[in-house]
Length: 102
Image 1 (spheres, rainbow, N blue to C red):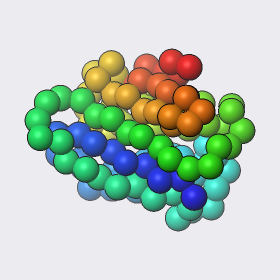
Image 2: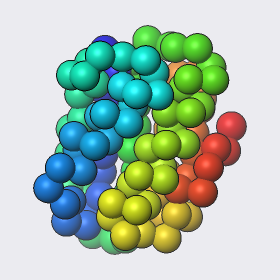
Image 3: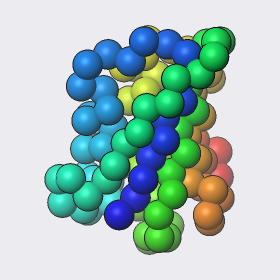
Image 4: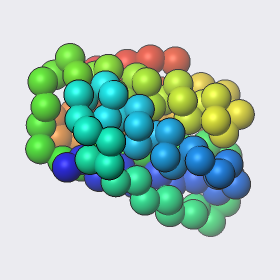
């Protein structure tokens, strides 16, 4: 079960956490409710960081999930895509709101 921790100093619109969870479920082929999203307020500053923890999945699915999540967060938080970073540190898959980095 993947766990996503979203950190931002911006107000998070209602329903965005659920949409983020659904985004990961869809990209990873998981059932609804199989992804947990935790919102962690940041002290200040623009931008958003999401870190995913969970057992590794197929590389292409992991890459797709972080790409989709980056785009969703940029849109949902009305951020410049360069101010969004999504990472699945193990095995080092990451993206900004513009797409995959690794």
